[in-house]
Amino acid sequence: MNESISIIKGVHPGYILERELKRRKLRKGPFALSLNEFPQTLVSITKGKRRMNTALAMKIENALELEEGFFMVLQAYFDIENEKRKVFCKHPDLTKLRPVLFWDTRIENINWILQKKAVITRVFERGNESEKNEMIGFYGSDIVNQILKSFE
Image (cartoon, rainbow, N blue to C red; front, side):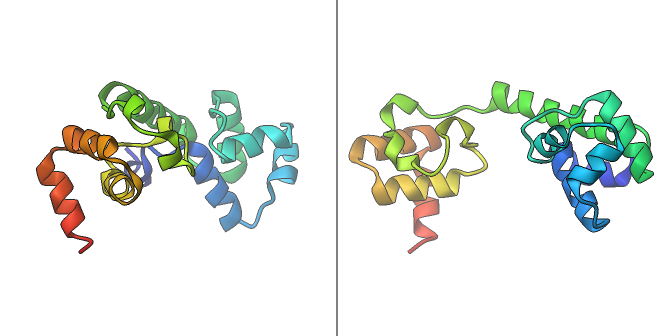
């Protein structure tokens, strides 16, 4: 496998495309038109709101002289990461958490494992007893205490 792919696997291919276009000082609109694609399509992909499809990936790789299959491999790894997140990502009982605690994000997009430090901190700063107890029940008192002590 290409070494650069192993470093960025799991990242949406659109983000990598965005970085590559910036590095080459190419604007998305004109680049999309040069590929006979709608600029909106390319913008949606670079924002991670749309999947990369095989035909478009091949056009982009050819235009940017990248290895064939580069973006589709990234898309496959991104899809795998999303499926793993759905299957393996447990979360606390969301009915016990007020949405106002996470006013600045969509609660269903929180990665409760990777972002546990931020979640625990926020709940213990702004949450009620029921919400704090839910965090202790979900993460365990040892982890909660360890994270809270790191902020003292």
